[in-house]
Image 1 (cartoon, rainbow, N blue to C red):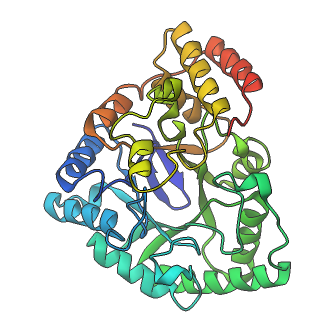
Image 2: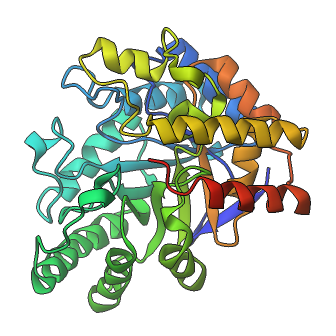
Length: 351
């Protein structure tokens, strides 16, 4: 497994996502996944204080971190892995009553995550959502940037980075990152680091994959020029690219099925649209015409983008992770690149 630098830390070139750990993925299965990941050279794990999700509940809040902490304690593996976690933004309803993060609660949130993770340091600490709002998760269709003045946003950023500077100085956090951010927001955080002497942004965790390519323009240029690595979540579009939802199917135990059973729409966070189902079918046909597995092709596509990027792969069940790991050696050739370009032009932003 290749290694990548995020600022001063080094991580594996593929990250294991853990948002189902402690709920849909019980502890024994989560242990098996982490064991398999490390055996494959995947040493970078991503979690969040609000996980597990689908849905996030007060009863399960923090359980994913606790499962990772239990595994670290059981395996004595802390020096062999890199841990990323996230502090909830204002939509993390069971974190601090939905108030999000502020200069006066960063230190406590870090300590709470450290306790659940059973460690004394977090390798990458990320802001889960911009507190000013954002356009992730289909909010791009109605995005209105007028919510906060520039001066107010900059004052907030300066306060957060002052607090982050303290936890980094205390040795509790090694690097700082963002999630669900914009190009302007990321550049503003970089400028705030210059003003305050706080930690510089080294990573941005945004959705990215063959069906969601919002990152490809301004953010891609920012990442390449400013050495900010994309941690690409949902590269398989929440399972659409596996083909399991073909024809409108909702397989028992799938993410859409679980969402429906909890009173949701089963729309995979707005991803399961008619256009997206058609695009997923076209992706599968394209991959198979090239002699490729559609899942393996999607992860390889993300890994070969012309900007710094690490895909986050996640699985509810261990056999799904095994399938993902089996394709990590794939390299796409010029023929595949040309076919993917044609696919993207035919199926742009299908959700």
